[in-house]
Length: 265
Image 1 (cartoon, rainbow, N blue to C red):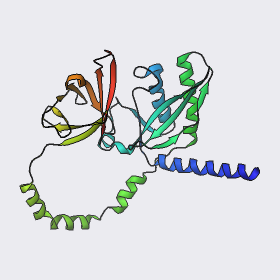
Image 2: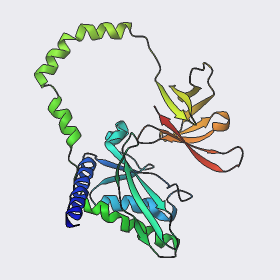
Image 3: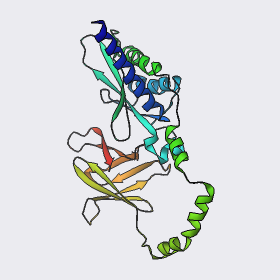
């Protein structure tokens, strides 16, 4: 019995150590504006509290609506996405924190934080703080591992100069002969593929392999959001840290506000 208990503790320690190492490789935490089990942005201030607690324990956490660092805008995979999920319970509020990478793989899941508090706001916040005990126990410290790998594998300054000089003529020829093309990005939504084609005003929206555009995305004056004119898909949207396009629109059947995610391929 003692041997089984010992092996169990060793396994738990190994899993926690591996999870900590993976999490330390990431520089940022991205937090959504809302959680699936609640209605509205930052309901009960749970998303704001999530950001506060991650920053408290050494992370660099941002809400999707925040002004993001240039590095994070360029590379959404330098961050982990935080999500809070509710578990079923009778007279008990149970919450779990999950961290996923940009491919959607869960790299960390906390144990349940729970409380018997009856007031909704207090209950959600107490349960979240309880779940954050596992985050605190990680003793997070950014390792810079990915940046170190890039630096170690990078050629020296002399090598770069020689390589660049040897390719000058080749590059010139390529630039001169290369056709000018517009940027195209493919997204998946409701099992259908869509293509965003870059334009001066924003993007043209096409269904995959179709030649006629089904709508347009106009960049707003703040440069962060887009006005979408595309029939039933009309609304307002923005790109998240992973490059997905988040569309907020009115459901034509229920006349209720819904949020759709166009997943970048």
